[in-house]
Every structure is written in C-alpha cells, then in structure tokens.
Length: 360
View 1 (cartoon, one colour):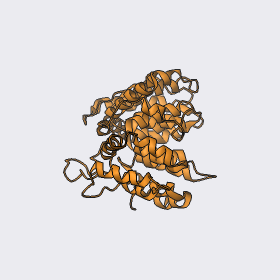
View 2: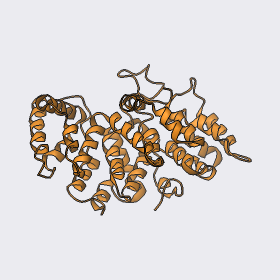
View 3: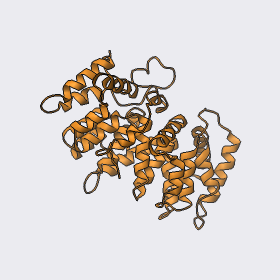
View 4: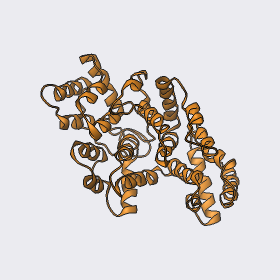
C-alpha cells in the first residue's frame, strides 16, 4: 500500500491540474478578499505583499535543498505562505528550471510527519484529496469514513468533480466504483457513501421552503423511529440536496421538534449510519464543527493522530475556513488550536502546522 511518505507514483499519474484549485474553496483566496465581492475569506494562511515571482520562489527552494543539509525553515517560509494557485505556479517553475518535480525533491529531502505535511500541502488540492480518499478505502474505522465524507461534503461541487477526475487518472477506476466495491463497508452505509461521492449538488442559493418543510417531516419520521434502519429518504435528502436547501430543512426540523437533527442522530447509540449521517450533516452545513472535533480527537488521549491532525489543519481547511474552525474550537474546548498543537507536536512538523493555523 502506498502512502505519502514512500510513494509518488499515484501523484505522477495525475495530469497537470494547476487550475483546479479554483474549485477548492467557497471563499476568496487570501489576498483577494478586498477585491472580491462577497464574504471575507476565513482562510488562516498569510501571504506576503508583494508576492515573489514563482521563479524566484523556485530558485529559493532550490537553495534550501542544495548542499549539506536542508533549510527546512526556508521551505516553510516559502510554501507555508503561498496559496494553492501560487504553489502550483512554483511547482511548474521548479520543474522547468531543474528538470525534477517539487514533490520528488521534498520527498527526498524531508522525513517523518514533516515530510507528510509538506507533501500534502504542496500537492494539487484535487490530486491530494483523491489520494486521501484512495488511502481511506484501504483502512478500517470511522476516521477513514470521515475522510470520504469530508471530500464529498465539505467543499464545493466543482471540487468534488475535480477529485473524481483526478482519482480516475491516478487509479484507472472511478471513486464511485471503488467505494461500491470496498469490502470494508456494508449497506446501507455503503449506499450512502456512494451517493455522497457521486453527487453533484446545486451550488446556488435558492431554497424551496415547502420542500424544506416536507423533508423535515420525512427526516423526523425516519430518525425518531429508532428501531428502523436509517436509509431511503434520509440518504436521498442528505446525499443530494444543496447546502442552502439542507440548512433550511434542518432549521425547519429544529423549529418544529425542538432539537437539531444532529442532536437526534447522536441519540442513536451504536448506529454507525446515524453517526456518519451526523458527520455529513456537519460537513455540509457547519464544517467548522466537524473539523474542530477532528483536531481535538487527534490530540487528546494517548498519543497524537498526526495523520488526522495534518488533514484537518492543513489539507482541508487552511485555505477555506480554518479561522471559523479555530473560533469553534475555542468555544467548545476553552483553549486554542495553537496551544494544543504547540503542546502536542514538535520540530519542523509543529512549525508548518502553526504556520498554516495562523495567528490566534
């Protein structure tokens, strides 16, 4: 089984996807917020102004990895303060100048959790999520299911399409068929996951209030009947409706029944589908809740789950809404992401995480 630390073949099978970062975030990229209309970016990374050219950055990266030893701080200073678009340009410039890929060089120069984090960060977002999804299909446990749900639900519909294209290019199979064939999942959870990864949700803001009322009633009828398995209409609603439509449905549910749908799902102890439905509900309507919990559960207890911590802090949210995740984390746990990462990690791995987490 390949992993980020030991195999680049899968990434090299993916054709150039330098423009797909445009589908990665619901918010303007850092540095564009002032010029863009709409909400202010909730990304956490900082970008210098003015930004050096891609060629200059590539040359400085080359200096950092040549000779005796590696200047890890320089790599963090450059790559940790660049957007996906800028990193893509740097990768193109680096390969053009030095006839090797940036990922190859990072792989050969770095090691451990720091290497994994830097390679995840330097990769194209769609290719990266395709890789994470493929790896998740090989591992048991709810955390692996979380990865599939995050990829399917916590970004834009166009980004999911880009991930599916990247997955096909890398693995000569569709993400949908690999989920359907995965022996680790059984129905109805498998049916739910297939629907999530194969969906293309409406991305507009329109909401049908009558539909929201009707589907809130359908959800209530299914969720409160605890002796029955959750499937059918529940999977259809959560697996296909737009995010604004789902928010309206869940708000109608709360108004009519006095509890949020995720709270009711929480009451179905031992029901894996209910637990994964809750994860999907959070990722679709308030992803900051989910990722705050991923970060917390990665840190508390015996040892640190570096893989989940890296994914939650870097891959998924640093350029999307990590500011909101940090606010949610502070409200829920009476501490900061910065404090907990500082206390539970070390070395250059800690440094890249804190760079991407940003100021608090």
